[in-house]
Image (cartoon, rainbow, N blue to C red; front, side):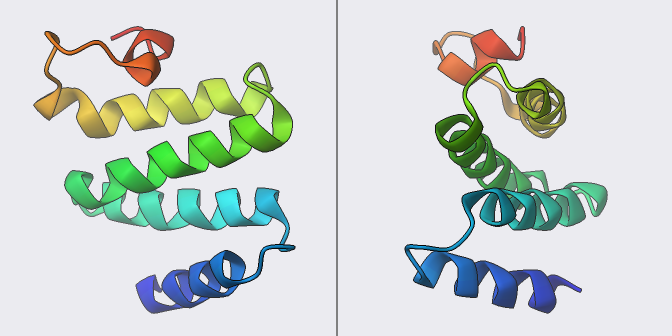
Length: 94
């Protein structure tokens, strides 16, 4: 399953004119796979990138952003450094 997501991600990232929402979907799916297997260090940067792509494409107030922020939060909570300000931490209410 991971190899399929990686291949799709490679295709979307290699074409500038690819559908950015599909790119974000693929990033989120791979990140969620890692999250479900407890690989939070691998999941977190993919969720962060998916959030950035969705915000750039759909706007920061799109309903999917809130749900993604909550999932992202579950990946970083064990290692969050509350002394460092973070735009995403503030939005996820950490």
